[in-house]
Length: 220
Image (cartoon, rainbow, N blue to C red; front, side, top):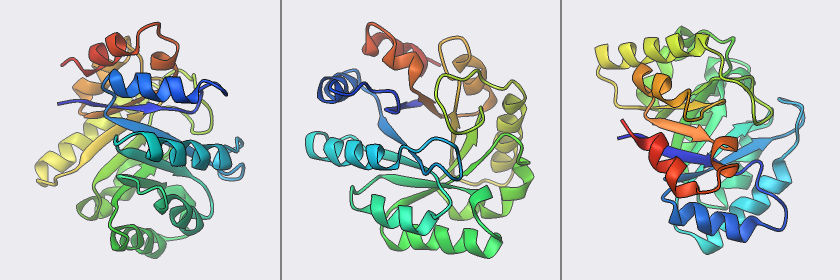
């Protein structure tokens, strides 16, 4: 079963309440919280996402899927644990070494939260194989992280396929999340490659009817 995590990055100011309620009614599975610090990526959404996540927590029971695109991983984990997310995903590239990757994985788990590990398009999938047994989700960036509305990089389909084959062969229970350029045109390819959680923002938020597009994206 494919799940949809709706990125709220481009939700318009003043329309937050209406949009969040409509997304919940439309049966999105998660609210995807894109946390950027202006350092790891150029854009800075940190305070806005903390504000949105806190607001969602007050009005909705839907799980929060927090994606940290930051240099100070531990500080961001501490800030976003306050909104009781379902999962916190951090970037492999933001860590100094493997030791820090394991430290962050354990720190999130110790705080009773699921863990995701994300990689940028240029990072080889093999680099994170050793961490897969210890995490709940692997997030494959299918565009360069940092802004919404980009076109999916076709080479990432093979990366998802390779990851899927590896986890199947090694019998690892883990979700594969794809993030970037996901729409009705690209979703079938991403799903066929093995992703079972799709992040979509622009494609959903620009649609007249959230429910219809979410249902279409979920179709096998």
